[in-house]
Length: 112
Length: 145
Image 1 (tube, rainbow over the protein chains, first blue to last red):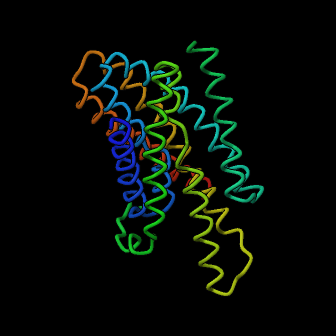
Image 2 (cartoon, chains in turn cyan, blue):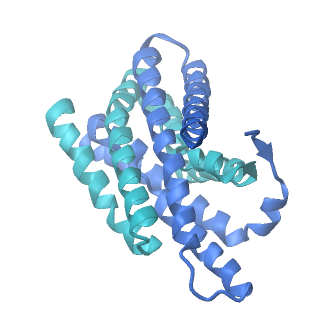
């Protein structure tokens, strides 16, 4: 039941930010919402309720490494999509490995 | 450049586009929770900034742009890919703001009211993202002169 609730809250948060991004113009500004803290907001809120504030704060610390990896990921997307005109679906999905390498690299050097 | 609200775009977005985002968002929130439960909050926290929605949104954006051009009689175009690159540029600024969001939550959550900290963190994310976007615009205008 908890997983269903988590799924619903996460889906709602992402949808709210997606609607805000859709109605905002110019499109470049709306692009900011592609990195909105929707999943983080849902997860941290639920984590505070179930595990407490200290546990959620530890998650937020790791999230900084995740955000740095996210930045590297989108820089690669800008390069491959904007300069190389690569196909959107395979490129953006394949580049998730860059996120994983960067995130776990930061985890092993900084967080572990 | 002014930031505007264009409600007409809501009619143009297909309902299944929202459904995909809802499902991905829900799945990612469940996954982040499960990872934290099995591997601890240090590893779980990484996934709070996992770009789960971006590839799906980029694919939909590319498809939408290609469809528009196809209807206008242009079968081959890179417009969709350029639109994704523009979206990714915005996301780059948003991800820096995401780091600021996480920093505020990390430092303030243990000693303050959780709802207040999360609300402040969202406000900080918006302020940092909008400021970076404005700075980038000013830089672009200045370099054109």
